Image (cartoon, rainbow, N blue to C red; front, side, top):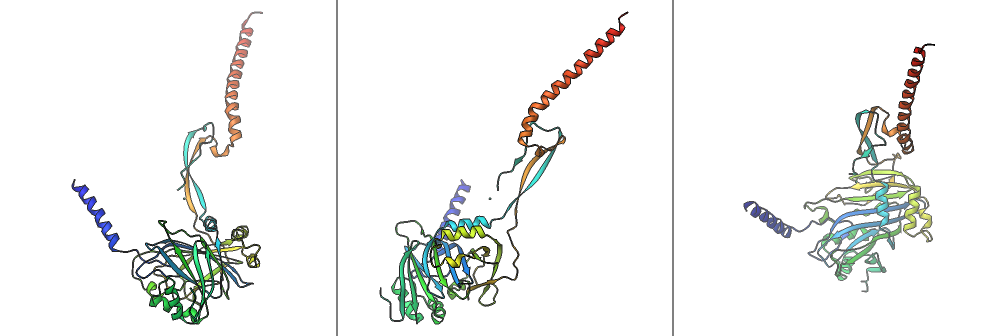
Length: 386
């Protein structure tokens, strides 16, 4: 009875703690929920397809959101006006399968005295596995991948913040400060808004943003109040870069980005599959996809992130291939001594031996008995008088 009371008490304490301590804001780019609300981005993946010749970047982003809000928005900066489209989520499934660790099998041999069974006995262990203000111009408004998107250009950060506030985005001081650098440098801000409606969680597909840029980049800069968060949490960001060679990333011009390169190799055939799924083959972007044949994967688990600048990519001095450490799985294998290892016998050989060995055994016994009979007969004939 006492143990049951303790268990009940523990559950109550955990519920109270969960209510009292709101989830941490683990955000990417710049989420802009309503004041007093939070948005948790639990997992984030991005695919960057970069063409050095045409200076074109295709930025495809997928994230899973958790929030109690009925709707929320986030902002993505780009150096030029993007072309917006929906991408197939299967692209990230293929990326994950392509860069997954190889499975290597190691035999655990069980040596048994004998000539072996009638067949292979090798078994494997289970697999482990509104109209804008004068300083804000709305370049485009459209619905894409479940989002309401507005592509904005502004001459003043405060005016842009006021526009966002008027249209349901949070305009806190840290966000206005974050906008200032992009406005000053003539970047474009795309505001995305996702409405949950009657659903229990947010559902959105991957978004493609295609634009011109001087160099490949990932929008890594964050508002100061997000960078200075002291809350507990963890974040995982996976960035796949598909281009003509292996790339490396820096924080800003030459700062250190706390990410690991997990995989790098030529994927010419797979690159064609990706471009086909993005349905860009017969568009003006088709030339920018011709050399997308080398894939590099980065993983960033830093928390809090040093989001003081963007991540810029450049060709790596190290052009060697790289993969994850292989996953070693053990298989139980039975081998017989002095008989041949069962693994040497093919299925057809085993079928033949199942018949041949018993027949040979019977013939050997018959031959031996026949020889004894013949020898006995000769001996008796020699003993008979002439």
